Length: 272
Length: 260
Ligand SMILES: Nc1ncnc2c1ncn2[C@@H]1O[C@H](COP(=O)(O)OP(=O)(O)OP(=O)(O)O)[C@@H](O)[C@H]1O
Ligand SMILES: [Mg+2]
Image (tube, rainbow over all chains, first blue to last red; front, side, top):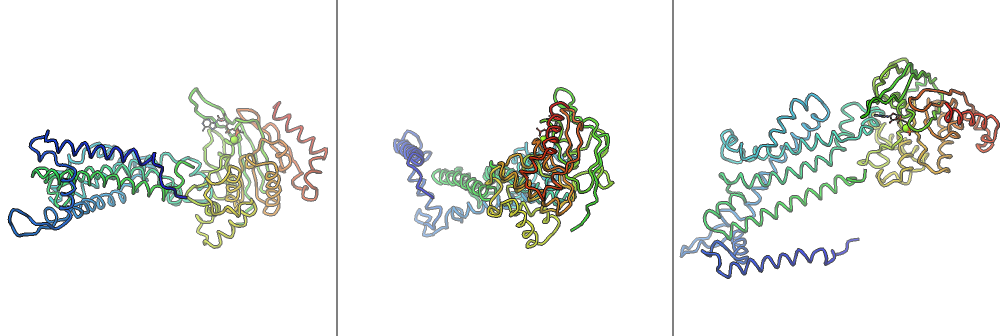
């Protein structure tokens, strides 16, 4: 049965939100911050958000209508960024899960490959962005490659960790039923590791999102991170704040999606 | 279905040591044992004497420190389909429902879905789980999980069944019913069964041969034939237990456990 959540659950965050908005409005209305454009009010941010999602007149007496910001609506900037991490993550999953399984099941493979995956994970992705731009150009390919490299170590290492944590008798039981090595991997190792793979994916998505926003500083338009940066440098702070809020909310929604996926795919988590 | 009921289990000079934090634990010490095809060997002994260790070596999960283990004349090199294992702790897979857990053996052998479900259904009914076949293992009680595990092994039809205290977690009534069923299956199929238990009565009632192990390091200190399971199907269990021979063997086993 689904009951509406109790007020004790939703009331505190709503109160905080109201207080924060009120304080924010008061600060920007008071004129403490000078010049005033440095402190856009919530309303100005909202306006910037709406403008960025519609066609509007350029203004200044010029009789011309433009589409959103920089030729794209704000939601289109967002979608482009999401597509970038979508591509990078899909590649990362396809490579990292088999790699993690192989590392977990073949001892020497882990010893050969493991240190390099660890090394890659320890690098801040922007360190190798320049290198990737040299290889793949300034366009989307280098960004997808960047996100792939950023996302695959956490997934591979979580998969490895999951394989290592499998209770030995889970493997023994299926071998006693006559399973071959390959069948043991597909019928037991992979499903038993699924909870860890999803945990790794969750880490990877968070990491990929921060990375894509940062990577869009370089030729990032269209792209929500690119727009946030550009609008800041052009002193359109209301738009920049609108982008920041969208970026943050998107991160929360992405995390929520993966947690829902976990509940769907791993209903036994914590129970067995 | 391979009808090979000719696999003897031969163990010679078996010793097992475990490296523990504070030195070496000797779990088994000089086990020599031959289990003939079709025997139902019950194995009793005090807790920690090495019963599970012996079973895991026979199952091929552990390589013994010293000694040889052969099944059907071939050295054991790992787990195998001809040796089914009922674990002391149920090991069912939470990503499969009970039916798919039970049908897993035929599945890895490539048996068609309809056929493997039919076999699974039969054993699910036998252990009284037909009505929970669609649940996940973690939705079952401990005793139900244990019964599901037994059904899974029987569905796979191994020639040798290694059972580690399979009825330990069950209530008396269910235990007695499953004891009867186990005997029926054993008589009908002629499977070779090694049955570990800490119940003296259970060991004597079920075994065609009763073994007792000493406290750690485990050795076999009693090896007696028994006939209550072979003759028993004409006599109700209660009368069987009242027989003087039954009481005599029970006393002997109990003494072997307490004064090896
Ligand atoms: N993997 C292991 N590492 C170290 N010691 C072990 C290991 N497995 C078993 N032992 C030790 O070997 C001895 C025998 O254990 P085993 O599990 O075979 O006993 P058991 O007879 O089955 O006892 P119970 O009736 O309580 O199940 C114990 O002292 C145990 O601590
Ligand atoms: Mg044991």
